[in-house]
Amino acid sequence: MTTIEHVHAREVFDSRGNPTVEVQVRCRNARVGRAIVPSGASTGKFEAVELRDRDTNRFGGKGVTKAVNHVRTEIAQAMIGQDASDQQGIDEILCTLDGTPNKSRLGANAILGTSLAVAYAAAEAYQQSPVDRFAAIWEEHRRDLQPGSERPRTSLLGTGMSLPLPMVNMISGGLHAGRNLDIQDFLILPIGATSYRQALEWIITCYQRLGQLLNRDGYEGTLTGDEGGYGPRLKKNEDTLNYIVAAIESIGRTPGADIAIGLDVASTHFYDADAHTYRLNATGDAALSSTDVIDMLEGWVSRYPIISIEDGLAEEDWDGWRQLTTRLGNRVQLIGDDLFVTNRERLRQGREKQVANSVLIKLNQIGTLTETLQTMKLALDCDYWPVISARSGETEDTTIADLVVATGAGQLKVGSVSQGERLAKYNQVLRLEETLGDKAVYLGGGIFGEINGMSSP
Image 1 (cartoon, rainbow, N blue to C red):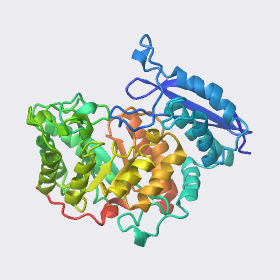
Image 2 (tube, helix red, strand yellow; image 1 turned 120 degrees about the horizontal axis):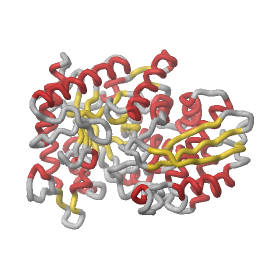
Image 3 (cartoon, rainbow, N blue to C red; image 1 turned 120 degrees about the vertical axis):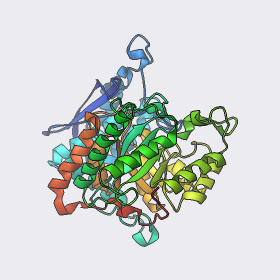
Image 4 (cartoon, helix red, strand yellow; image 1 turned 180 degrees about the vertical axis):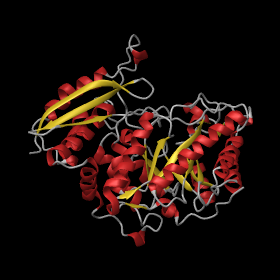
């Protein structure tokens, strides 16, 4: 029933109008399963490699016909006749077929598209919903998950379906908005909401009010970055925090109690690895040490209701990360994105060095569904919060919405609430909230029970 009999791929387009890979797989006597692969702008050097054509006469070299052809030929030949229900076996075949440590031969985009399409094809063959299929696959990984008593931060996570706390982009800078601000994303987390629907309502109301406040003061409250966050040309990074706090208060919510703030610093992009210094536009020509950046972040945490900081330091600044974790690890969620790139070996290294307390989970950073879930399981065993995330170059594919609910990961980071490829995910979680009912609880801000020290301005 779950024997694969057809594999196909095509070149489609993501939210930036760049080519990407779509793969479809069909099992015998079943409908097609289909998946589309996203792409990032702010990418870590240790990520799995997406294969691009590099033909400058076509899409500036960003075409993916080589990756598509790999799916249609080598990958299809290896997949046909395999059992789609054996997700781990399928993904092992894909990794072995590629034969490189970073999936650079066939392309992580070709491999991930196939891995996910196989999962969808198995769901079709079993007449399962995607969320039920992903839950069944996750069950195989979580069987020996550390008990909650061994992981006090994450004891509520990973043991059953749950609806995620949304982490949503309000204002963009860095590579997501033409470097108008040093910090890549300023986000909000509705930690006081009691349901996913209420959380989303608060977010949308706050986002719309923020645009009104920016327009009132002559800034760009209409123009948006890659992920839908506003892209105002504010004078300094801290102005953004003040505007977000004002927006929260103006909709009748309490900063820190109802809605908290998150930062995606993406600091690798202003780090000089040779000099081991950071250079921010906000500080002119001054070369900042890791300690200087930590001082800045700690000052913001003391003055604003910040609960989450992603990539506060660069991907190879391990000593700085250790200091950051020592100073802020009990006060905020410290997410490693470029630092860990959804890679188990990088995460193990981080755990050994006692850096960060959270890991961003991005499917295309590692390249298969199995490896993604293995990293998430390791994160939970290490008592690190997992945050399932989209990419800046997104599509209408809703895999991560089903995946975050199926695994009970607890948090979903998609972007903002103004673009269709983002809303596709948020709306899918709304559907799951309705259809799953009591089968999927909403944990909300309760997942941060171990965090303390937040303060309102």
